[in-house]
Structures are given as structure tokens and as C-alpha cells.
Image (cartoon, rainbow, N blue to C red; front, top):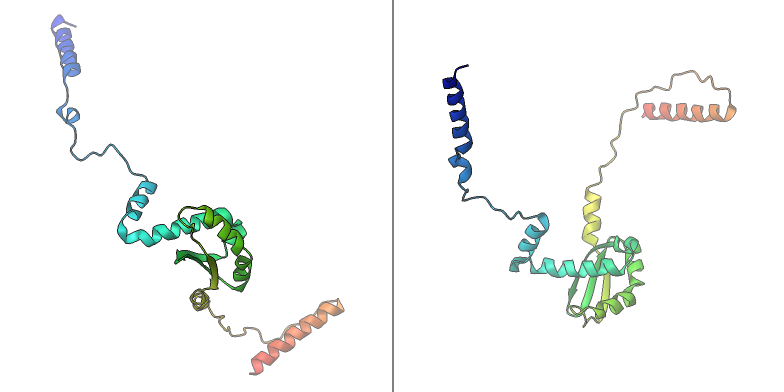
Length: 178
């Protein structure tokens, strides 16, 4: 190789390493260096005045979850605090009776909190709307047409099992007669 080609290559290398691309040296106007996580987004939404009731209910449920056992806490649909009374809605009568036994414990621990220090009573009730909603979601059993006509041979040796199969055959024949 000649010296001219070496000098040209060296000159190109020097230019390449000295070059600063304008695209990378500029800073974008729209890049945010602070990323928000889900907790900060939800807390910023909850800090708005429209969601004050949600903040109150969250505090109540958080405190109840610290006081009660997990099995007892699972009976609660929702809870709120209003006019010196803690209201708790349950799914059914079993949860209502379980939480009625815990009223004194709840009052004792709620009085220790500065937000709920003026608590007087706890009211536990069943939410009938929840019960009605659940019933509407139940799919009714479909009645299927019997595909068998009860015509088969019963070759079972055991007498008890043989009687059971004969009862099944009789039920199939009765269904087909209707």
C-alpha cells in the first residue's frame, strides 16, 4: 500500500472519532427523567377532592385489616365510618354473627387511632343487594334430551350393582315415556 492511501485512512479515522453527531448532543424537550410508578399515580388521583370518600374508606379498611383475622376480614364487603359509628356490610348472616362478636375489640382499637378516637358503636349488617346480584349471575341448569332408550344388556355379576343399573334403565324408560 502506498503512503497516500494510509494517510487517507488515518485522516478518515481521525474525522470519524472527532465527529459529534448533532442528534445525540441535543436534549429532547419531551423526555421526563422521573418515571411514576403505579402507587404514585394512584395516590395523586386519590388526593383530589372528588375521591375524599375513597380515602376515608381506605383508612377504615386498612385499620380493620390490621385488627381482625384474615378469615374474619374476608366476611366484610365494605365498611365506612360516619357520625361516630363504624358501619360494616357482610356477605351473609354467618359473617354478621362473626363480626358482632368482635365489636368491642374493634371499638377498643379504633379509639387508639387519632382519626377514629370518637367512635361510639359498631353496626354490622347484611347487604341484601349483594345477595340479589349473586343470584342473577347463576346460570340455570339446562334440560337435555335423553339420548338413550334404555335398551342394553345388563351383564354385571354383582347383585348390588346389577340392581343399580336396572334402576337407571327404569329411570331412562320413564323419561322417554313422557
